[in-house]
Length: 280
View 1 (tube, one colour):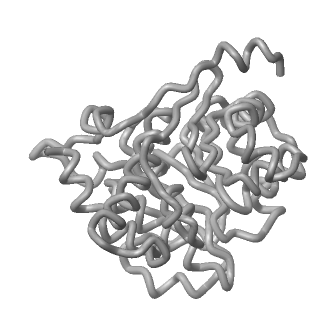
View 2: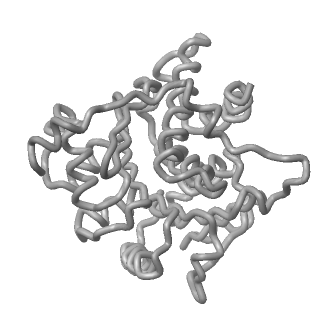
View 3: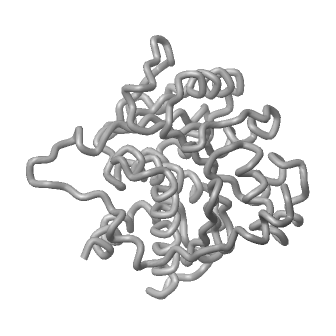
């Protein structure tokens, strides 16, 4: 990547004032089809929690239908809010408004086959996280520009074959480099979350270290997918979800809770009141 490109690309700030105009709206005559259909390919045996967290977040953000596809049978009867798919036989991706792939899903052969199929079919609203990012560290696929990657610094380090320390010290540089390598939107999570596409980079002005807990990234993935399913454009969906995600964590501390105590499920429980706050 040329140094002059890095110098010219200035970081803009995404803040509270940007939220209300992006939040999906509902008319009195709307129904569940308005929220669209979100598919989550997630949650292998022993990691079902990742799938459930992402699915709950997508539903809380307004997805009308949330489908779970997992190779674990433990999800089949315990989650009545979601529709369960047992395999990808006769899979028609255009039936879904958004697709999120990777949280807790360990079957690399299915992941690779699915990613290649979705690229071939030119499916647009796709979010990749966790195990899907690990796969990209091995297979450098060129992805559609509307797809969204959600790595933390360690994952991005593996994807770009550099150290986590280098990523931490040069977050803007490596977010833009990842965008160029993979060709899509990159959400670099962490202190000062960055969202980058081919011609802009935004810093999210919310969030704090309480988010450093297993499962919070799965919640973010589900939130992005939920907003995508309601036709929020991909870059804006990533920014919207990342800001609200961080804002809930900020409110957690402001209301007197300790920085060590936030859990991923707390983010989901606070989503209804937070969305209402921004809508007002």
